[in-house]
Image (cartoon, rainbow, N blue to C red; front, side):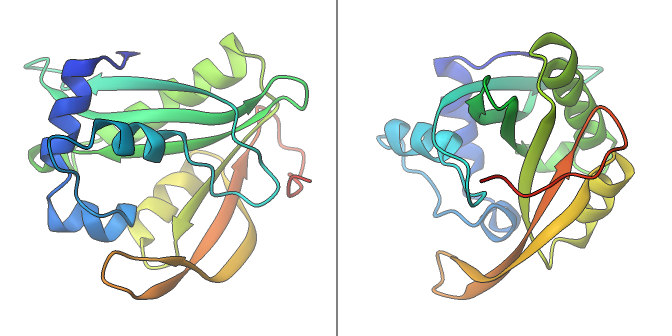
Length: 177
């Protein structure tokens, strides 16, 4: 896990055309000249009640080849309220289903809770992304809220999202606001 750099961003933009990523991330693929749009997407907050704030984005690499595989992002960081929103994507399709998502999620949560001192990390996920929901639940996230018809996909479909949250303890999370 290392801080994202310009070369990583370009690779992520190249990966963004994968139809599965388009479906699971809810974005329109990025053209080579759309670096700022990609950065804006990394920083966009989708949890109701959270405000745009500081963002920290990490690149993640394969265990064996040290190949760039994806990113995690903590965004809307509020050190006063001690919370942030998490985004995660294993961009390299050859590396999906090999435990990299679990590793990236755990290392980022560890950073958020232990290094940054956050008390809660939120995320949103499309309700049809059952694999991600299962991963998040295994990692300690709980569903807080269903946001019905809350996100318009690049194909015009409007879909539901869940708001989920994790904490370093087992206390019940409450929606922000």
